[in-house]
Image (cartoon, rainbow, N blue to C red; front, side, top):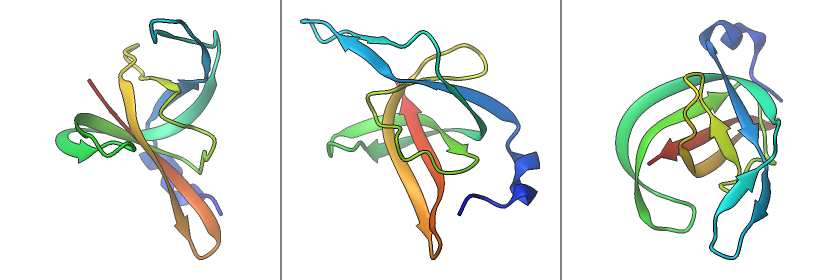
Length: 109
């Protein structure tokens, strides 16, 4: 079950998430030309977190998406409203008794 529509006024920004298109022999990623847009609540806060590989990383913020997006991984690219594209450090899909509820994307340097 997705978030209630009552939360929509709190989702003031729109983020664009693009899938990885390719990876060259040096490990440089390229991303799809277009992506999926999500309404989101952006929270900017520096925190020391563990990424999905267990490494300590500095997370500069997180995007709480309106609804669940279980297909997003750390291999995707997130574009914030200001045009910046920070690295995705983690993606959590939050569940409740009805199933997937919403997703939280952590991003950082």
